[in-house]
Image (tube, rainbow over all chains, first blue to last red; front, side, top):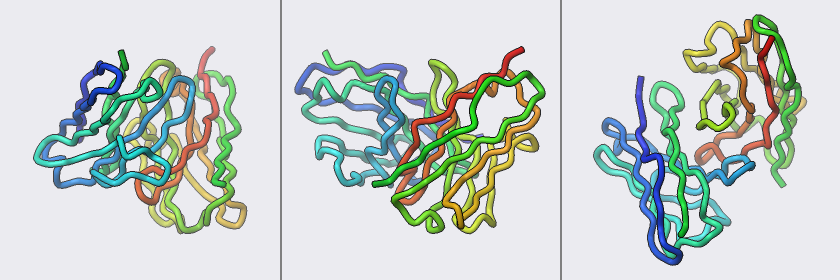
Length: 105
Length: 116
């Protein structure tokens, strides 16, 4: 079955840029989506189809997808960006990455 | 305003059954595919099942295939998950969600605990 690999944790200084990766075999040939989940809350879609932001998502969030890696980039990181982040694709079924805990220092 | 409200969770013994419901409003229900996704305490997201907008196509995670059944009633804007032969490893918060751009909108979840 298809697998997505994310780092367990990423730390970023306040105001700096955080990068969260999602590795999967030829993931660049699939549409990658990203979700933010804050503590005790339901997930929220922050990037869809590799690089698109739903309405209401700050333009500090961006995405890319090529080769074997999809990437979520959070520019000018804020305290409120501290959360778990999950990547997701459709293979023969829906697949989620294991999640990355983002800490803003 | 999009709303998805899950119900039907609870405590059940191993081997038991539960039926979850997800009442929706604020969007055209019959235009969206729908998912059930679960999250065990302290763990990541685990996709469970998907149903196409017209109900014709259904897909399941291998871990629940032949035990769970996803269905929908487009006249009631409601999604269902029938869960049979429940196992302790099915213990989780179960979310329903709609699918258009990605998995766009999520409910707040209903907790299922499988324990003797």
